[in-house]
Length: 308
Image 1 (cartoon, rainbow, N blue to C red):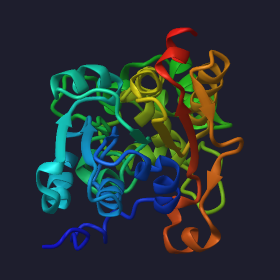
Image 2: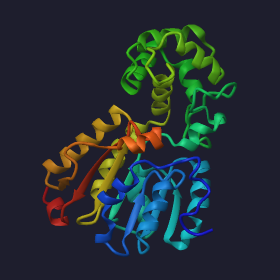
Image 3: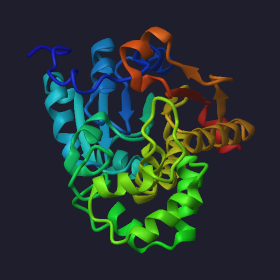
Image 4: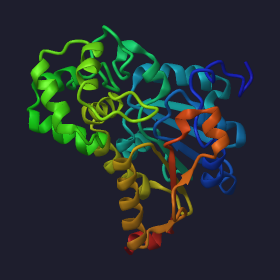
């Protein structure tokens, strides 16, 4: 199977591929290292490796199951690829263990993968039926599941999670309904309870916001993102670029804050004054691209960063 002829593209089409390639600008660093901190099924990674035959790629992901798909998709690129089961928040440690330093580019495509959503046994999607609402990226970990969260968290804490992480306007009503329906043991049961109380949004199932919020909370996605942005900005080579794809407002706020702080400290420059969005043509072809927002940052010299 030749590079680029993978058989996983039908289940996962990466978003804003050409824009990602343009902002990474890896042609400026021939033979350099690029880090895909959320490698997922390997869609963006494969595009990067095809476009730049001389670069090496370090792929990181918290989900060991999805790394299996990435390994399959990226196998044609041979020893140019190294995959690691970790969080991108641990980038400094991963680079040290790999004997690498100062990547020319880092890509973070945050959020959930299509492969995770499409596997009902993982509980990420409200189409999970009789499966338990797990939602952990790393199902081999001892972290609490979404089921444990909804059955044991206080009503007040649930409402906060739904409002802050899911932008659910009826967070209190949904939280109240969840507490009243305990114990909730299946995805179908959770969806039914939420659907009766959540705000209905055109084009979206009423449970979408709640499932998003629970997933973000279970995986501490914002915590990993805050730490990961900081370490990525500090690990980049001079002129190296960090490209981030977000799908939710809380995520984008973290990116804007991290980039503005780094620019204020003269550690580099922001490349995107406004987020880059998918074209209408891409959205028609791949609806997942609709909420995607891309932001990019270029690291300054080591002298500039050390003097900040």
